[in-house]
Amino acid sequence: MVGYRQDTLAGLAFPEIFHTAPAVVGALSSVDALANLVVELRHREGWTVRARMSKSALVRSDDPVMLVTFENLTERLWVDDC
Image (cartoon, rainbow, N blue to C red; front, side, top):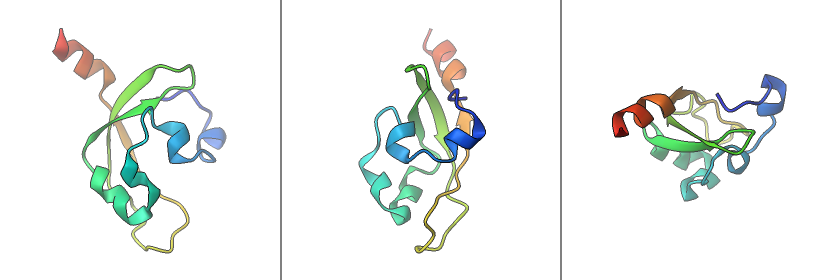
């Protein structure tokens, strides 16, 4: 969806993935504030991908990583706007 190989994507930080990194992604506990919201991700080639972000599957505050999924909404939102 964002044009990276899986091994490259796994090593990226949120600010490297988000087109406009939401202020709340600084803390693991606040990532859930983005759950089920449409976020803008940055494709490897620079264009914007709009996706709905899931809640993190890792819920302990001491987890050093987050595990979320994204549902690509780019085409659907683009067609609906026309």
